[in-house]
Length: 308
Image (cartoon, rainbow, N blue to C red):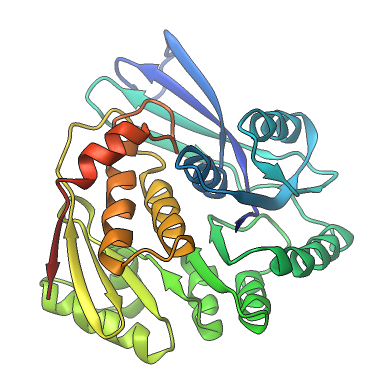
């Protein structure tokens, strides 16, 4: 069983328009409303792959009720804390040239009693799962060290913690030594002040994370794939480049595949292949954080993994 921590879920609204012109009235002929937030995407893909997971986080208001309904429909165990605030909305405007413009709300203000209720439940849920996946931004009022606390509690319980976040929350989380992280090239350059120009540069940054006690650091290179470190080995994984329908949620699908692989105790090569196939399969779907399992199987046969 996998615990998915989704602290800042959202209603994702996708508008399809021909062009996006500043200061003009734009009309769309297609609108999609989906349960969003990186953790929601992760849980959805885990469910599609046949895995079992529990989702926890914060949900409130009409949007929170919408997301609860979606989780129930997908038969995902929902242990989210009810809050007084309204769960956020996020807008994605997709134009005919393939570009996407996102507008992301910050999320609700979490009250102290809601935070405490979450922590208490989280400690209990750790007893039921094999590993934890935490993805996405933090809602207001939790503090940028909140992931650090969750990692420390998971480590104390002997559970692996997979983290996908950015900014100050990412930087502070490193102090607690999560099992897995996946910053991208731009985030690493911003974080360290060092340029990454070669694969050797990527390996050098991964070695720095390993010295900090992170067992499986990963750096995403966009269309050039990713480099993953594990057990003193470095793997450059390159999936096939396919024409994208919607790339939103691809990183989340990648994390879901990796979590499933770890939960099933697959070999590192099988884990990497499954993760990359899931991330690639997501771009073929209009819905964010969704994969077709048959496409995942086909893509996994065309993943190139190079041992560096």
